[in-house]
Image 1 (cartoon, one colour):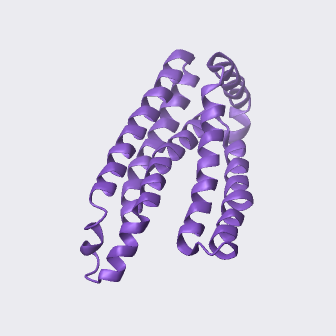
Image 2 (image 1 turned 90 degrees about the horizontal axis):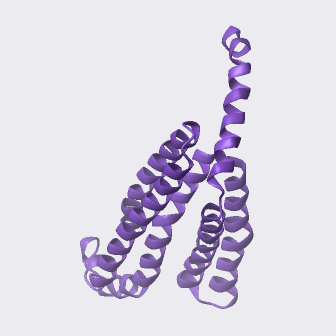
Amino acid sequence: MGVNGLLFMVSVGFNAAASVRVGNELGAGNPKAAAFSVLTVTTVSFLIALVEAMIVLSVRHVISYAFTGGETVAHAVSDLCPLLAITIILNGIQPVLSGVAVGCGWQAYVAYVNVGCYYCVGIPLGLLLGFHFNFGVKGIWSGMIGGTGMQTFILLWSTFRTDWNKEVEKTNKRLDKWEANKETLLKE
């Protein structure tokens, strides 16, 4: 999980960058630039995650020796590395799409997707696979991958079917609303 956490930080950086860039482009009234930014950051993050996953898979038989010398642990880590690779790829895309959604002002939507996918799909699926079907750690992890995968696909679908011109209009309405209330807010 340390390897996953380290590699996840790359995606978190892209999350913040995507949020700011998309928000700025929408606020500036540039729907094509916003759409291009989304495509670019998602593609770059996916490619980095893919390379990271391939590296993890290629060193799966020796990676555990950086943390332990035990053969039993080494075999278990080697056996779990394909799940780690899938997690890395999904975690390379999902945070970026969450950042895009925040830049668009869809925070509530993303919160509902997160809660639904993790608590209504990922955890129950993990419990079912891990304990009922006796897959153990692989089952629990697979359930969480299922939740993250579902979240990623929902955010991909939502993002890539977005009408960026309408998003610019919505952004302008929000900006006008805040501009109208600026004096009231500054007095408080």
